[in-house]
Amino acid sequence: GAVVSQHPSRVICKSGTSVKIECRSLDFQATTMFWYRQFPKQSLMLMATSNEGSKATYEQGVEKDKFLINHASLTLSTLTVTSAHPEDSSFYICSARKGLAGGPYQETQYFGPGTRLLVL
Amino acid sequence: DAKTTQPPSMDCAEGRAANLPCNHSTISGNEYVYWYRQIHSQGPQYIIHGLKNNETNEMASLIITEDRKSSTLILPHATLRDTAVYYCIVRVATSGTYKYIFGTGTRLKVLA
Image (cartoon, rainbow over all chains, first blue to last red; front, side):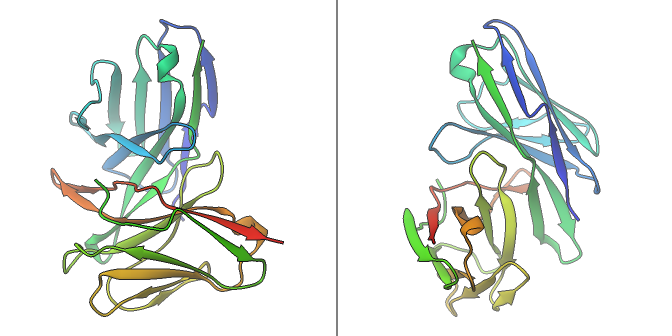
C-alpha cells in the first residue's frame, strides 16, 4: 500500500497565530513530499516541494517565510503557516513521492486526506 | 501551466461505462500519464498511470492513443461513489524530481 496521513484534519485558529500541519508516509519512505493548497471550487495549487534533509523549493508567488516547511525524516514533513490571516484559510494537502521498480519515470505521488484551516 | 486539457464536466448513468478524455499533445516520449480523482473534501486518490500501452487495474482502464497525444480513462461500471473530479496529469521535471501541475479536471457526476 501507499498511505499518507495528515494531522490535524481541521483546525481553527485566531488571526496572527501559527499553525503546524504534519504529513506522514505510513508504509513507505519518501525523500520528497509536496504541499498543495486548494481554495473552494478550484484545483490544487502546488506550493512547494519538500526534500528530506534539505531546504524546500517554493513555487513562484509562495512566501517561504510565511509557509515554513521542514522535512526532517523520510516519513515526516511539516508545514507551518506563520502569522496566519483569514486569507490563509484553505484546504492544505500533502503528497509523498513513492518510487517504483520501473525507475523515476514511474514514481507516483500519494496524497494525504487534507487539512482544512480556518483563520478567524 | 498544466500540460493537459479536459472537459469541465460530464454526466454518466449508474452502471454504464464512464469515458473521460484528456489531451496532452506536448507530452514527451518517456513521460507517463497519471490519473487521479478527488472526492469532495478529500485528498486526490491515485487511479492509474501509463506510458503507451493500454493499462487496466481494479479501478479503471487507461487507453492511450498511438501518438500519445491523448488518453481516455474508462470506469467500466460507474457507481454513485465514482462521482468526483478526475484529473489527468503529465508531470513536469524540476530540480531533480517531478512535480504535478493540476489542471481544472473533469467533474463527473454519476446519475442514479
